[in-house]
Length: 484
Image (cartoon, rainbow, N blue to C red; front, side):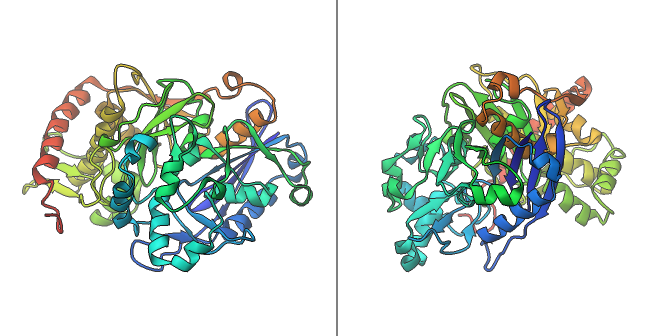
């Protein structure tokens, strides 16, 4: 038996995985986000630990006694600042906190080689700009910092007493030399930090530390190895068996992420493509990130006054197929490929014949075409993308699946455990850390539960719309309020 723990933003998931690869149990403990000021997003690390203890305690005690290895997954980019006694100095600043946007330009000014070293554009979501914000706005606290950890790695500290991170999660800090898979002295110095303040690094599938005797006794386990683990997307990829070059998955949640594995490090920061180390050795991955994906459907429900998202999907099937209505889905700005936090949503092509059904259909198509822009930013002849596994709570819909498959011109595959991929991947990494199998044996794609192939007629329709979609963005870019 193997335990996977995923520290998410809205909750902690704990999952037990049997030696046969089947899910033997799971539990969830909720979390809340604090937003004390506009753009701020914070959580108290102590709340993560309470949620971890609750989720683990809710698993079957008999099965817990059989656990041989533990893996961790977690929300990326969060900044947990510790003092000399390893006490938490302030609430953690999360991945979706936007206060450090001004510090992004400052980091690039201090270290112009940032995109080359890290392989990524400097964005407020990453960890490094958050520390520049702390240095400027909370200087006394900044001076007291002795250690910086990511969310899952702070949980590891509580579990094992060790300060360790893995390559995939560390890639999202802007402090890692991603190609060399080690901390970058230049990037740390740019933020007034040094390597002594950083956790040790290990591969996600390696044993990082051992569960402490105290925690093991409380959880009803032996002091078993704890894997390096991974950031949520990399762990989700492990859960879906996406570990070899060209293998790809699409996660549809609040945001939309397309994740594809590469054998080497292949950055493209100019297209706002993220290039990170994978959670397994000698692998890297590239990601496109769309900031508003399934959240656009929630917004569409509110706009139309419908009951829920399934009602919106059902209504979209009644739209007039002759409608040329376009929707730019940038309700929270956009990342890949535009890297434009000022971008906003647009309906274009409204007529007297436009009704709720056409609005609903346009929202689905707009998100699908935004995803296609991200896919094209990822795709090249070196690592072609042939099919895409689906993940995330917003991913299972036949109506939307047909639209997305046509827009991406790729088959979409749904697999068992796709909605809990990070926790499943963490458990698989725990199995690898325990030495019970290799990557090829453990990280296989789960059984397929559904498949949607692109409909040729819809593909042609979406191709034509994609061209106008891109032309519309180009036409209105720079006209957003507050943009010169």
